Length: 267
Image (cartoon, rainbow, N blue to C red; front, side, top):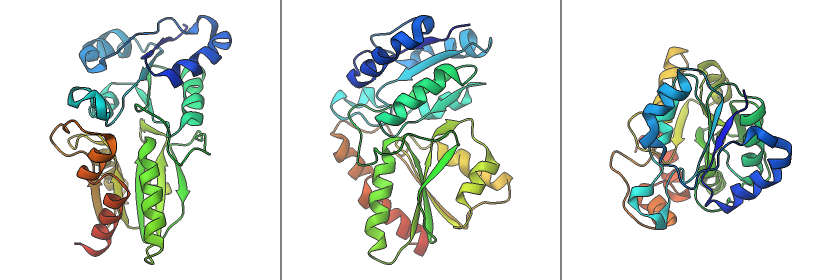
C-alpha cells in the first residue's frame, strides 16, 4: 500500500523538499494538508492508522517551542503522546539535510505509521550531518558527562560542550535520530563511558523522552549515577521568542552548561 503523506504546507522549506521528491515519489504523496493539529486527531491515529498497521507518514510542523505563533501553538505534546501509539516510529531531524533523509526513510524504509517532527524556522550551526540509520549518533566525545538530545536542541548541547571545555569539563553530546521506538541496549551502548547524564528536550516533563530513557537504562542495569531531565517543565510555556523561552526554561547553551555542572557537582 502506498503511504499517505500529511504535511503542513506553510513550512516553505519542507514544501520545497517535497516538490523535489514528487517526481520520484509519484503516487506516494496522497495528501498535503494546510494545517494539522495532530493532537485533535489522536483517536484517529490509534483507530484508523495504528490498529490496521497502515503506512501513513505524518509531517509534524512546529515541533517544540514556536515563539511568535503563541502559546497555543507550542509543539510540546507530540513527543509525549506519539511514542504511545503502537507501532509508531518518530524521527527527529536536526537540520535540513537530515529532514530530507528522514523523509525518504519514512516513505521507503519504515513500515507502519511514521512521524517526522521539525520545528518552525531554520537550522542551527549543526548542519553538516545528515543522520545515520542508528538510533543515536555521538556528535562529540567526552568523559565527564553526556548530554542526550534530539532535533535542533543539539545545537545548544554542542555550544555548551564547547564552553565547558574551556573550564576543563569534558562533555559527550549524543543525538537521538528517533524518539520511538527506543531500545534500552542501544541507548546503554551509546551512553557507556560516562555515568552522569543530562537529557535535553523542549517538550513537557510528564512522559518525556528523558523519563523513558531513564526507565530503559534502569531495566538494562545501566542507570546513570546522576541524571538531570532538562525540559519545558509541567506548565505550557507562555508566548515569547524562541530564544527568550529557551533562556527562561534553561534550554539554551547557558542552561545546558548549568545542568551539566549540577549533575557533576550536585548543586
